[in-house]
Length: 456
Picture 1 (tube, rainbow, N blue to C red):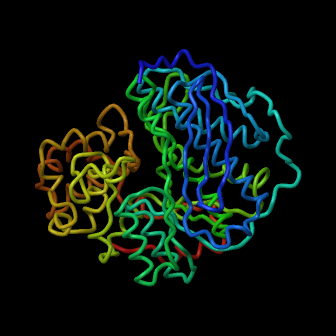
Picture 2: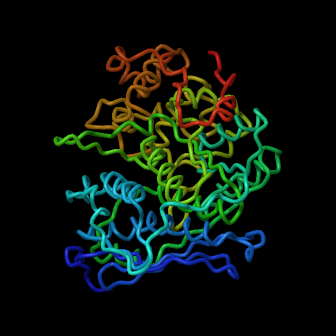
Picture 3: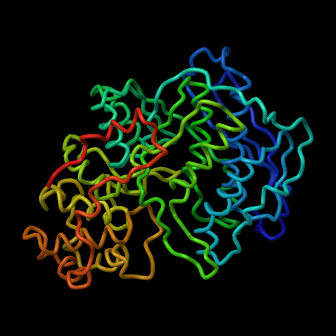
């Protein structure tokens, strides 16, 4: 492909979105300047595809189309967007503006680019056809609970809590990760879930080529994209509740810029995104659909304490993102042992598991490796800012390190010894044990975590 000049692109157009009941495949079409892209999302084994509620499906597909467009928009960050068909209502415009602005804040900051304005969608070109009927959005058909799997400890804690409380659910995932598929099937075979749904998403290969030709590239708010796909899946597979596993640390920004803007790697996992998404869906797209995080009030410390008890899952999980790239895993085994996620999960579990137990999980002792010191410093807030990864708050990491410094099993590890004096004034670990109340979790689900507080 010839060299691509992002500044030459004036507009991203949302061209078309459709679902084919014969193949179970949704196609999302975009135009970035003169370039045309088609993304495919496959929903296999849809029950009674000819009987799908077409109004509900069309409504859900629109949002999935708009949210997934962030992957194509970020290639050039054009000043305008347009809609070839129905355009979003005011709440969806607000949601999209927030997602495209805050969800791309990390990429634009790290690339030295100007982020899109929150008002980007307010001035979008009018639709050529009839706008969305904002007065009577369709109502979701069917009921049931799904838990999206990410391969890590958090979704397993959610699955265990729901199972213990007697709330039936299926697991669901988007992508081709063998690790996640195996986990979904294992949860089903061991009686935790009622089945596993595996959806595939194929980004237009032209976009990947464009990245090599000079397009802007970097972190996108992938969880927002997946939320849109969950809405479509709810219509096709007849469920009305998505229980996410995003903890309260997802609300903590990595850094705050001079003008007051916050850069949060986990924006699309934040409570702010969930509220905005839920409001847009309920008011303009699909009444009766629920999307929330069961662990929203829990700290990473609290979640790690819970997960430490789930010994049967320790050999199967992985939070290392090098397992989950679009082009497949980039690590042998389940952990690379040299990234912020590996370091943080190791640190979070260390107070509750022995060195030998963690060695069995990770295949190496990260806290006894002097070359890891800088990475652990960053986690504890002793560097410039929290790493751009899905890790806990710096206060949590400092409290965890402080705890290890007084633990005979860990205090002589190289990294713990090096940082002990610098984290001595950190909060006590017990400050992070209690879950904070959250209004986003429906009452019937709050009981799933009652009694899940652990001691020690």
